[in-house]
Every structure is written in C-alpha cells, then in structure tokens.
Length: 542
Image (tube, rainbow, N blue to C red):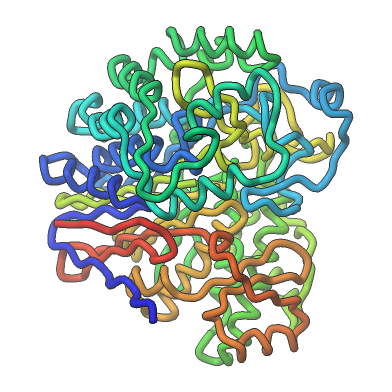
C-alpha cells in the first residue's frame, strides 16, 4: 500500500512547493534571515529551472502577501501585443470562435480560437517584473541573492525529478509537433538528443543562467528595456511574431485588493479579475448556505459539483481585463447573489448558464516566516512549455496566455491589443475574523477553482490538516454533466453521482486533478504545512 505524507509542523517558518529542491532553496533563505517574500521569490525563480514544463522566465505570476497587518495582492500578468487584433487572428488562422483548449487539453469555452503554439498566443511575460515588484515592496535580502540556487541549477545542471520527467515526456509526446523557424531553439534547449530527460538524468540550461544573471543584476530592467527586450523584438520581427520592444517597455504589474467571501466562520480570499478566482468564491458562496452535516456524503458531493458549475458559468461569462471591460465583481459578490444561484441546484446534475447579476500545466508555492509574514504565489507559462517559442541564446520559453481570449466581439474578454486575457492561475488565502490563517493553492488550469473549493471544504468542513486535505480524493468537472473522479473516491459515491445524472468517469491518469500546497498558522504558534503526494514537492520548515 502507499503511505501518505504526514503534515509538517514547524515552530518558526515553513515553505511548500511542487519540487523538493525549490523547497530547500526557500528554507535556506528563511534560515539565513530572509523573510517569507524573499523565500517565495527564491523558490519561484528556482522553479523556472527545476520545473520548466510548467513555468519559465517567460511566464506570468500572481501573488498575495500578508505583511503582518493586511493582505496585499499583485497581478503580475502580461498584456497582449499592441498588434494583436481579431482581424489579425482571422487573417492568420482563418478561424472564428471555436471550442478552445484549456491547460488540461480539453475543450472548454474559457479561451480563444487561437493556435496553442507559436507567436500568435504570446503575451508579455510578467514574472520577472513581478519578482522585482514583490521584492521592492517587501523583500529584505539583496535581490540578486535570491537567484543563486536557480543560476547554479541552470549552469551546472540538476537531476530531473520523477514527476517533472513524466510531465516533460507527456508534453513532448503530444501530437502535432510545431514546425517553423520560431520553434528551432526549443528542441536544442528542452530536449536531450531529441527526447525528454529521464528521471534522475542531469539537465543543464546555461543560457537560462545567463538570462537570470541579467535579470538579477538589472532588477529586470534588461528584460523590459535592455538587451533581452531588443533581442525579443528583433527575433519576433524576423520570425513572424507580434511582440515588440514597445510592448515589453509598456509592461507594469498591478497592485490589487484581494476579494473575499465568508465560508463557515472564515474568509476565503482570491485575486480579482482577470484571474478566475471569482469562480471559487462564487461556488463557496453557494455552498456556505448548505449544511454538509445534514446531507449524505453523495448529496454533499453533488452540491459541490453543482456549485462549481455555477461559479464557472459566471466566471466564463464576465471575467476579463477590468481595465478594458466592465466586470460586475461587486454584484457577483453581493450577499444576495449566491442565494439566487443556490436555488438553481436540484437533486439532478445540471448544465447551468451564467446568471444576470446587477451591474454596478503552473507551479504553486507558499511561504511563512517567524515574523508572521505569509505568501501565496502561483506562476505559469500555461500549456506545457507555453508557446514553445524560445529566444535563441536565452534559454526560456514564452507563455501562450493569449489562449485566454475569446474571438466573439460581444464578449468582454474579446481578443484585442494591450489587454490582459482571462487567466487560470489563482493563489488563495484564508483568514478568520481579520486574523490570517494561511496561504493555499491548487494548480492545474480549469481545475484550480474547483481544487480551491475542495481543499477549503476539506479543511473547514472536514477538519483535516493541510496534508490530509491535499491528499483527499478529488473530482474534476469540465463541461456539461461529465465528471472525472479519482479511483479513491470509491464505488458507492460514484454510483450515487450517476444516479443523480452525473456522467462519471473514473480516471486512470492523476495529472488532471492538479497539485497543491498549503501552510496554516498553528493556534499555539508556528505553522502546519502540506505538499500533496501526487507530485514530487515538499513542505519544509524550521
């Protein structure tokens, strides 16, 4: 039998993420006097080298920081090139609106009819600026010191972990390998003799080491205004890309106010659009009016699935770049709105549409320090290796977040220039009566909001510790009445869901259910942390 991991209890500080070496990097930063933001940044930077199928220098990030007094939010996502328009997409692809892919390879109407690879879905990378901006506001150690481990792993190599090797192999085995000059560098950097590195095989990326040194030395200025920006501009112009030096120079992160709903006697926090955190909050708002103790296990599971459907229906209809479209966030989070949505849930599986409120493959990590600062951070290039466009000599792939746009001209998230697309990656945070409880997250595209709902319920309804809550069997709703479940959910619950009209499939492949981490404050001081057993990660503390 498989033995589960035990929760980590740490008296002073803790980190948790999806790669053990990255967790060790963060713990070392805490031990030498860095704070939780320093540790989180060192982990995030290291993960670009340690887990490249899921995130890279050319990706985006979102973060929440509890600074000891209040919760801050950072939207570190990039915008589309100024040259990206519906007309350009139509001319390049001949497509109109079709069912796009999400981060898990399915066909859910959360994005555009853009090709998944190549220059067209590339948006400005926001991660380097996000690292700088988080450090500028909260960091305590020198910025360049946070790059040491990442540069070392890139320059000298590291043995690829089993989970990363499996994800790497799946990504390279996908049909339809892209062809074209813009993809020429991908194989040189991200394959070993044309194949994915095996588990335990040493992989080096010295070009990424040089890029990270430039970012560290210039506080990311070189990426957006200097040599890297100029090289990206020239390469895009030569190989058919829309990204320009002006697009990079115009990039800014945005400090935002996190949003919350009450769930039981806690507050669950997510970041506002353009991320999909609203889907989790809307689902939890529906569920907060339901008592699981009064229901059978299958009835409670049915309620969770139906609430998630309602949350996604609204998120897919309304989430867009709030600087470019009116997003009815306040109306969606009005206390009366989930009451009306709750009334739509029946004893049978439904396929709900969006409501009408009043208008007014990713890595996750968390860190907590002895002073009480806590960080929830998520970082991604979206589909495995993003666009697979790699700037020659610099060792990183550009993200393909343009897939988050729609082509429907009447949709608030319609593709257009200098816009942030609908974004899947969302960090989470819990508090209680104004007191921080801790950061949490579950990565995995469309899985993320429903993973948040399942994790929060396991913690607050089930009374589980973070490790047990993360390891609990999961389900995944994608579209219609189809639900994918892990085998551990059990035959009785599967039969009960099918009796209620759910089209249940028991999964053989665990990757679809995402991977998560969480750190919670202990009532008597210190922290309890978990990093789930589905992936290579680790929770470490001192």
